[in-house]
Structure formats: C-alpha cells, structure tokens
Image (cartoon, rainbow, N blue to C red; front, side, top):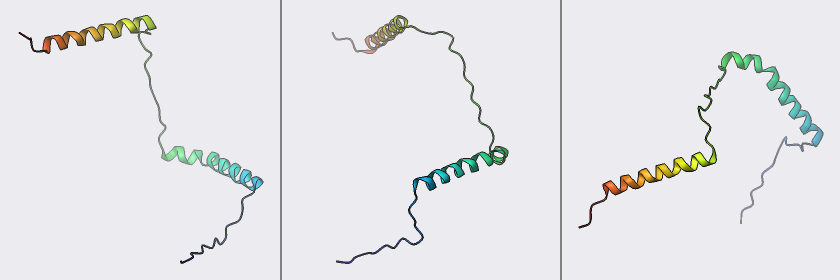
Amino acid sequence: MVEVKIEEEGMTTLTTPKAILVGFALIALSIASLPYISQTIPQASAEYETPSKIMFHGEIQRELRAVAEAVRNIRACNSPEIT
C-alpha cells in the first residue's frame, strides 16, 4: 500500500471577517471596472411586443377543442377506408 502525502503550502484558513473583506473587495473591483468594461463589451438590449389579445381560460379551451377537431378531421381524411 502506497501513501500519497499532499502538502498544502501557503494555504491558510479563511475566517469569516476575512471572507467578508474579500467579498467587499471583489464587489468594489467589479464596480470600479464598469467604465472600462462598457467600452469593450457592447450593451445588450431586448425588445418585446405586447400581446395583441389576452386569452382567458374559456377561450383557451375553445381554441384547444378547435385544434383537436381539426386534427381528428385530418386523420379521418388520411385514414384508408375500410370496405
């Protein structure tokens, strides 16, 4: 049996105050770098269209029944006739 020993040099435990300080430093760095990043990365934009008609529950059920009926009619037209 071979034992592998891994030594962690330079690793220190990170206490809660140090972790909070590092977190705040990262947030400050990201805020400070915003002017430089905005010059290199274009701003994203999104557009949306407002729905022309809002369907209510009853209307949705009616439309689904109409679609189901249309599918049944297509299947009936495409099925071979049994003689």
